[in-house]
Amino acid sequence: MWDHFESRWYADIARGGYVGEGVYQYNTAYFPATALVMRLGLLLGFAPAATGMALSLVAGGFAAVALGRLAASIGASPVWTVLAWVSAPTVVFLTAPWSEALFSAFAFWAWWFAKQGRWWWAGLLAAGAAFTRINGLFLTVGLVAMWWFGQQRGTRNPRSLIPLALPFVVLAGHATYLWSITGRWNEWRAVQSEFWGRQLVDPVTAFVNSWNLIFEFVPGTISSRFIAEIAAVLIILIGIALLLRQRLWAETIYVFVTLAALATSTYYYSVPRTLTILFPLWMILGLLLTRYIWLRWVYLVATIPFTAVVTVLFVDGQWIS
Image 1 (spheres, rainbow, N blue to C red):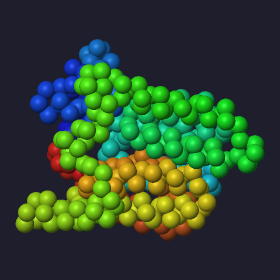
Image 2: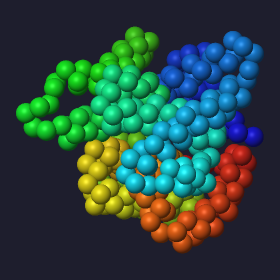
Image 3: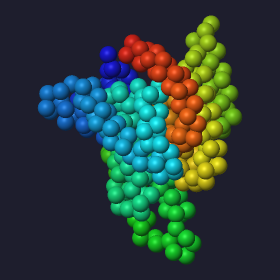
Image 4: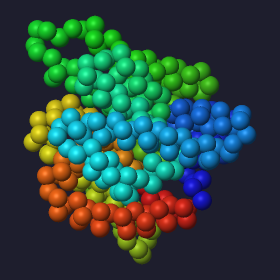
């Protein structure tokens, strides 16, 4: 029931590596961490989807603990922040055998250790995030911003930046490996364009294309998919404004860089699922739920039925971004 879309791409990599056959010749669009765990599961006799769901459960649990600590660091209730995270419709992506939960575990803890000034742990975990999704690059930009804003001018120690080079080493290593088997240094970017039709455009063009696809994606119908994509972009913009109000500069940069990548693609793609890994937005939501008790119940009443509907659609094999 849960073996749809991304799960099958990772399973193909787990079984045969890069590059597969048919549409799976484009499996180089996916990073290897999740597939490697599925590969281990295969060696132990478990189906890739089962391994992936177990991975999501464990990694999601670790991520939840880190999210609670991050929320507490800005005065938000850890319980309500985590509850908001796991009751939202985006929790589907933390349950499925996809990469969101594993990335969240690496990224959330990397940020926590960075806030403690433990840069080697932060760098190692950020490297794990970079081995899981391209978003590890955006996370590292945010960590560098934290290093910059978190120390007084004239007292910044460049040596503490060394661990934050680890994610770039991972990304460079992955790009080199893809080059060795495909002959293209820009393999990841190239397949995004060739198979998914995504190229770099200005933000206005990206919005207009996404808006038009509401009416044109399936002729004669209104596409809820692209309504959700645009709504998710608006949610991120509101989140950025609230982060700026709280003067959470590094968190703002992480979210902004992520949005910049999403909002300069030919059209909006997978923005709602990206909300899952943007922990600063959940920290801010947790802060609001802490301050306004009435909002807690409004949130749960609104999200839980919506989550149920999204879950049914997902297990039915429908793409819900």
